[in-house]
Length: 358
Ligand code: PMV
Image 1 (cartoon, rainbow, N blue to C red):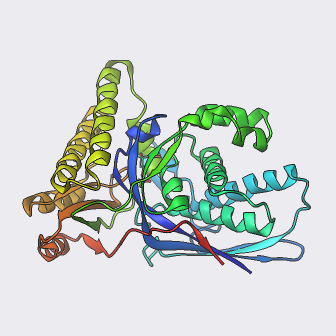
Image 2 (cartoon, protein in one colour; image 1 turned 90 degrees about the horizontal axis):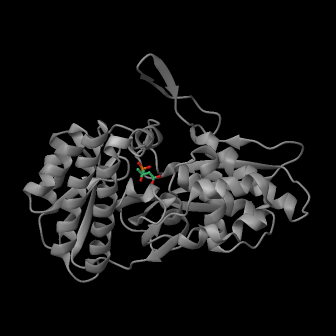
């Protein structure tokens, strides 16, 4: 049996802007994992998992339409498909396998926390199939394949979650142009796509530990659909494009300041995170989309009232918010106020290591 596991992630800053090629974001990999067990099978293979198998579809109403969300199973099949393309390209024989998937990235009742479960399942399956077929892929190649699998399901996804899940730790990430990669994928071999110059602007830079701050994480209890939020927010119409361009530049400046202050200046880190919250509020107002829901607003306000900085993490609309607290400040005060308003503190820490396997 081959066992791999991949950590979940949280966005610290730069979300939304990061979907534009070359715009940076900061993320952390967390010490909660999704685990994949792969065993060779006879005749046919199966995916064993309540949530990551052919599980229930979820949908929402949008106007008169019912919109079905991508299911986590779509990422499972995309990861298997890309690895099978690589196997075939390398001239290796097909082999059946069973996958058993278990996850600490979801609430036991089946709700996702927003900790990057789709990214983690993609990364962990690619790692497992790399070992199964003896492909000897580098960490960078596994990240590239995870991104190619992900954008075949969700073309706008930045891949920040995949980078955090593949590399671990605190990272600064900038995405490549995914539409250019998808176009290459249609015409060329995977070997060519993995070596294409289009990857040149993609950066995954480790940041090390932040100085003088502790991160708190709160879950709103409401899962959100990143893809629908990104669809609504990152498609600027002509009249809003100037403000969108301004958002992108402000976000870039904030992330650059954050990276500069990261290991040295906790009060500057807090100031940047407060600014990032305002930038996301502005983006939400610009697009008529609720990034900061009432619960996320309460999570951040309670943190700010206690001298900390809080913001939604990722697409917002539910899921998690993060708080940076100066060392020595009273975390218990914030955590107990959160509980009073129905926000569940998640006990998460950075996961420093690369994707692990045995
Ligand atoms: O909601 P999450 O944690 O999946 O993060 C989404 C982050 C976005 O920047 C909004 C989208 C993306 O693909 O990076």
